[in-house]
Image 1 (cartoon, helix red, strand yellow):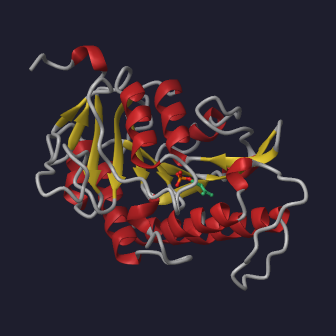
Image 2 (cartoon, helix red, strand yellow):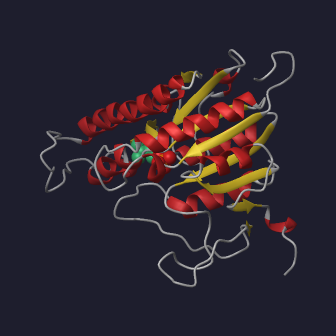
Image 3 (cartoon, helix red, strand yellow):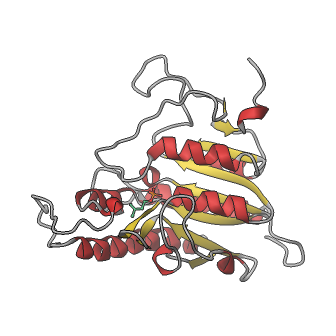
Length: 285
Ligand code: IP8
């Protein structure tokens, strides 16, 4: 358990949407995976760290956001040709619907954390964030100084935007800002679905191997399902992780389907996965 007399030793964990949901099946959560991750968070907290959980949207956000082009902001006089029988008739209704769906997914995560005895506080970005990308505005620091053993939970969301009314704020950008702005973040762990880390070649290539150490000056091969994703997929994560590695010692991409690797990465170990380092610090090959 974290100790109330010493400053928190923060560990930021991103649960990828492709890990905690079935990405191409509308509103389908992977409950066993979520439960296993909750167990990992309990171990990390019991080891004296203060976890912050940020989760992605997966099929609770991207499918409708894509169909209704919410990432592009308001498009006056536009509606999709087919609405897939979901009863939504405008972008405004789609925003409300995605807000509700994200809370449904968040409830699954929070209840799972509760089942292993963890206390959480949830901070939906729609209530405090404005704008998209790493420069979004919003005072999230205020949420991080409550009870020492309360775990703050954030997620990617539809948020207000000054220029085009609304847009999609990725959980990856929230992770970046937490890592850059909080004092005492010792590790940032991106928990992936369907991948062990970053790969040396496109995933369908038989020669593709796990890259154990990656920096932003190295090539990147990863899958980005543009047909589904409205945020940047693995390329966005890698770019953000490279920046985070400039200020945080342990930055990892690991398979979230192996919770022991998540725990190891969070506690300063050397799990199977990809360690991210800043460009200048990579040893010359
Ligand atoms: O999955 C996207 O967040 P991400 C949020 O963390 C929505 O990029 C609502 C699609």
